[in-house]
Image (cartoon, rainbow over all chains, first blue to last red; front, side, top):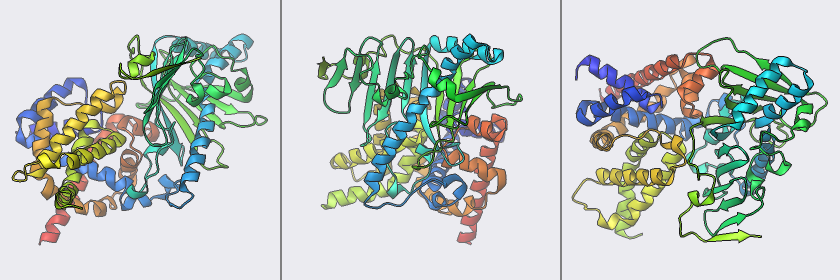
Length: 340
Length: 176
């Protein structure tokens, strides 16, 4: 391996670990790795450093430093820990209801489209509505700490004192209109729980025990953002006029720069409105109107908890046609209980 | 604790950092790494009776970890983003061999990592925080800092190189 080859492989190795390796380079990367001992050694060194750095920042000495990144972390463990964790989960779930405003833009689109208050916002949001109506989308839910950009689930905890993530934090939401969803989350013990609806029925696949199926499509929406407020996260036709009344909308066009979203809608809570985040940011693709991220910023902090919650689009590739049916998510021999 | 279990614990404790790094490289996801590491530890303990003590432990543990990664991939077909860093079998095997070859030596060197990280300043430290404390990818860091993603990627490559140099300097200083 020449010095140039080594430098090239090193760049590919860093890209691989950072998740930025492009497909066109992957073949070369894997071939070099498999065929050249020096390359494999180079990657092995980097891999060990990468993991050690991750440990250093999340469970080592550094994890307890840098208050800027940890202003809201409570790493003390005491007998009240479980109670506090339970309260925190409940708190988070309540706040997550507000995440129904993921589709605030949708409701607002109709409001503005019909009232003509803001022609440009109306046009933009109408496009977002259309984009939400078609195709499959996958979002990951993050609770955000501190400066509003630190993901709660991946913030630092000493290894021995690591608290279990809240059930909804880190959850995945798969959406297909009309009214189909799958929510993949963890229960309090960390076991995977999958719930969903194909629009006609609802179902839940717990970690243990029988799969439960209901003819009521709303039956297992409790854990879904907006589900308990009857503001279906998954339905762009939902009446969001109540939310719309509480927020002012501004469509921003960020200055062109690499890495920045094409366009953003900022919804600011009106002074006379109560509850909910002070601000909602919706990043979307200016061309396709595809919503890429939604952040609920400056959540009420009276009871602690994350300062913000984010939905991040991680995939818009088509899912399997039967993805929203429960059979897709469990073994064939699993017991299924039909609820009346 | 019987002698066999004690020996399994001892071996696993020594191998764990290398196995962790290997799994992290194969999954690219912190939470998955930890889950798979736990599953691997259990498998190691449960199957320790089949381990041939005349052979090195780490390659055996790495092969178990690789199986656990494969299991996770099969189970997580609906979570493609967590396992997007799949490598070919030959590449995974080559990486396992290389990790095994250098793990002990690197483990000793990496003892200096904490001191070297403390020397990072300014933007380098900020990017390192975002990457490793928050677990953000370069594209997202770039978005937050108003930089081009490639700038962040290059900065990460550079700072890791700087850390490697620092570690080697301290290793050489300690050995002198």
